[in-house]
Image (cartoon, rainbow, N blue to C red; front, side):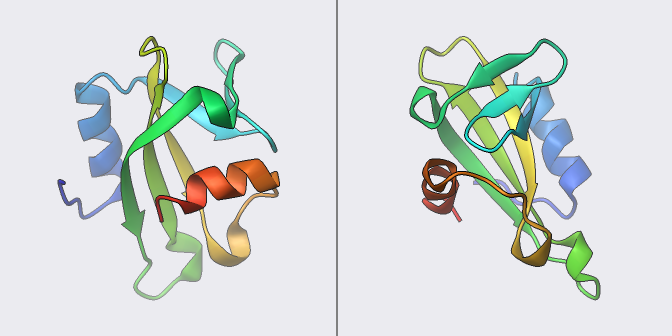
Length: 101
């Protein structure tokens, strides 16, 4: 697996490889705000994970996930904070994302 110094580098590389949809967590699913497309936990796979830890600021701690729909029609990325700054999400989503941390 590749290694990146910054979140921006990881996202740029993923986009160059077709991971063009920007996902956000919406409690129990992933949603693309641009087109309102949603994926439930059972509808996607996490194919790559990149963790970034802030050297001095806990607010800089993020995880970048490369996401692919099981149908293979949608590829995108998700940036998620962890620790104190993590989003409120469902148990199913926690389990899905935790398998890859």
